[in-house]
Every structure is written in C-alpha cells, then in structure tokens.
Length: 386
Image 1 (cartoon, rainbow, N blue to C red):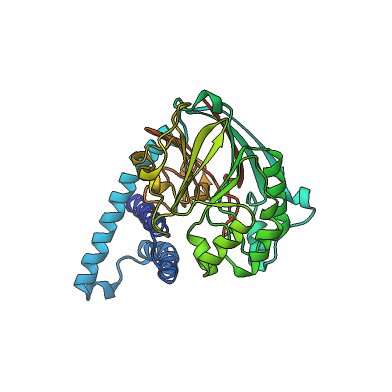
Image 2 (cartoon, one colour):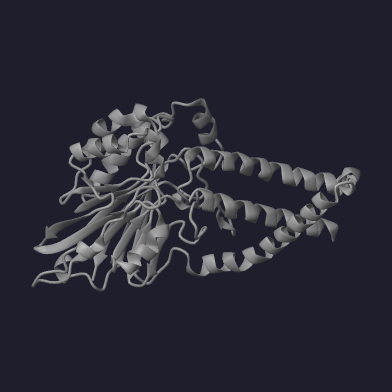
C-alpha cells in the first residue's frame, strides 16, 4: 500500500509540474523569469522522486520532525499530488475523446521524408543537438508532409478548393543547419498552394538572419506569403528589423493588423494575433463586410492556439496556430506531454472546431530542444471545401 501511495504521489507530482511548466510558457513573462522557472522545474522533477525513494528506503527522516511547519507543508503537497493524479484521469479521457478530431476534417493523408537520407548527413552544428538527435526513436529529422481537406460551410463556392500551406515554429538557431530548412522550403513549394501562412517562432538567433533571405526568400505562392511572429522571435532583440527583413522578401506582415486579398473576385481577409507577446491583435471591427459576390472568408494567423476565443468572438472561419510543437513527446496511452498552452494538451496538435471557428494547430518544424517522440515535424497543406 505504501508503494502504491508513493507511486500515485509521484504521478501527481509530475502532472502538477507539467501543469505549471505548460502554462508558464503560454504567458508573456520575461525570458529570464521563464528560464528561472525552467530551472526550478527541472530541479523539482528530479529531486522529489529521489526524496520519495529515500523515504521508502529509510523512512521518515528525524530532521523533519523538528520542523513542524515544514512537515505540514510536505504533507499538504503530498495531498495535492494525490488529487492531481486523480484529476488527471478525466483530463486524459477528454483528450482522447475529442483531441485533434472534428467532422470538419474530411480527409487526411501523410507521407514522411527521412531527412538524414535526403541530405546525406546529420544536419547539426552543435554537440548537444547531435547527441540528442541520436537518441533511439527520436523523430526530429523525420519530416511529415500532411495534406488535409477541411470543410468550411460558409466558404464561398468560388473559393472551393482554396489551398494553404501552413508552416510554423521553424526556430532558426543554427543548431540545426540550413540544409534542413532548404528541404522544408523545397517541399513547401512543391505543394503549390494559393497561400503560405507562417505562424511564428521563425528565428531565435541573430546569426541566422541571413537565412531569411537565402532560404525562406525562396518560398512561393500564388496569392502571398503571410506571417506572424511568436515568443522566440523576441530573442533576436530587433522586432522592427525582423519585420522589415521579412516584408522586404515580399512576405506580408499580419502582426496586429489584417490584410485583404481578392481571389476569384471574392475578398479573403487574413488577420494576425500575436498575443500575449506582441500587442495589439488585429482590429476586426474595421474589416470589410463583403460585396455583392458574398461574405469575405476570415482566416486568422496566431502563434498560440490560446487565442481561439478571440477568433470566435471575431467570427473567424479558420484559425492557424502553432507554438505547442504537437506536445513534442507523445507517450503511448498517455499522449502529449509538453504543450505550452493555458489549455494544457487540449490543443497540442490537429484540427478543432469551436463554433464558428475551425482551428488547425501545426506540430511545427523544429525547436530549441531537438526531441520529438511519436511527434514528427510537419508541413501541412490545407484544402478548403464548402
């Protein structure tokens, strides 16, 4: 019985730790503070299990009895962990009943590219990245090309078949070399979509700024490449310069604004929401309401899926987001682990319909930690149908 209670306590501890870390990375807290929280998190994840093991082996330590207040605190936390373990069960069940699925997803096909085979070598420029990428079952260099057909009942029939290539979370750090991103751009261009949408976390390191021109500048589409920024783009420490460099490539900046394009004479509104890291979100009250040919299609780009309520309130038809990396580590039975969202793992990846908005959350392409288990990086092509 003691071992069972200890096991439940550890499960609850890890559930509580994941709850905290996922929500900390969903906020606009300063980078240094997030790093402090990360450090405390790693310490807690490792130290508490060792303390529980010591208790099982040696029993209650004598020194704990001399600090009554601390003993109450420890006992209280043990109770919190037990409750967290129990509370995780309905959350897990809800995830498996409605996560990433909706009747608005009409079809889905996927193929994978072995980037090590395509490139001919491991595209890394960091000892740390090299070692982590070699962990068995790590899929960091297995690129999925996913094609999905989505039903939008309010879509104007003239736009039936409109295609969007969705890219997210490129994380240009230099640790993964440019060959990786050259393949990404080549594959994105092969999809030959009407629109390319990039939903943030494009670059982390200033040293990679030339890659924007040399690699991303090759992206093509019939009606434009649109982008918003994410929290990691703050690390370049030159937001205006980054936006200028991207717009000089011909990309269209949707940060805090909306843009209208005409396809088959039908207006299509693309709007940006970079909250909580960049304010404000686009003012949708000033958008055109349509013309004699019909209501404009409203597509929102947001780095975080947490802005789904903003999209709902602004009557968006489609929302594209990233940030969560698909959970990054998806364990058998348990599912995704890391999902920086105030909703936890609920919107870690996939398609979700929250009336009237259909949301597509990308697993993204890269990250600062090259670890992906049962969660391949992805490029998505979305085909919209009435």
